[in-house]
Image (cartoon, rainbow, N blue to C red; front, side, top):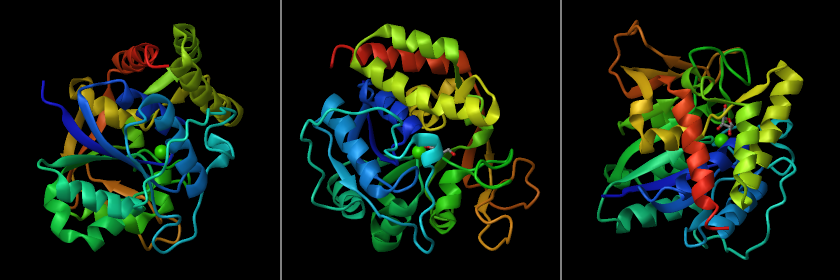
Length: 313
Ligand code: RIB
Ligand code: CA
């Protein structure tokens, strides 16, 4: 079976962690590297979380630290959701996995330059690293197969009334990526809010056993506690794993080819994504925006991944 070469750009982060576990467990993916962004928490903590997760589960994968702030703004983080560390109360063991000497932008350039095939870039955090890469190495854009992005929303925001976090943190970077001309698969809140895990399913994940189930339980539980406290919800959306799930089985999703753009100048709407499902702007369509998911199959994919990683740790 031909593997799918990917690079994951992420800001772990509780749901990023589940996306990473999903990717680590599936040999359909050839993970060329993980690059780290600042978002859920600061770049030091997101890098530490990525470094330690890879040290535990897939230590051969290279991990490179990225930009510590957005292109033009000060960083906005979400410790209220992910905890100060970015992983709630989870304490990951030290396996002495080293970060790459190259920063994320240089690592992206080197990996794409040296690859004999195009690489899919999965983005589950603010897009600063990717935007800076596109500006610095325009000649390497042709080596990107597509972007699979968790970000945006047409159903209202989770940071402002209209802006989703990953876009809001660095909307200028998102604008560069949306206008890049590279094929985009977008996983906005439209679909990720439907990709939730219930308390019962969380207990089923815990019951699988093994260290991966502890990590998955700890990461999801932290996010669930936030949703319980602030939204009185007993289920928690798994935003970022939708990107990896799409690569593993796109048939569990439905979506529509659309124009996607981002607001940069609105006093109240900065970071809002325009997902033009009804083609009101008559603009060239630049993304497949997903808006339906087979949630049961999605949750099952996470359970299967946690079970497979049981043999690793
Ligand atoms: O809005 C959800 C997104 O913001 C997810 O990627 C989550 O990890 C946070 O980064
Ligand atoms: Ca994320």
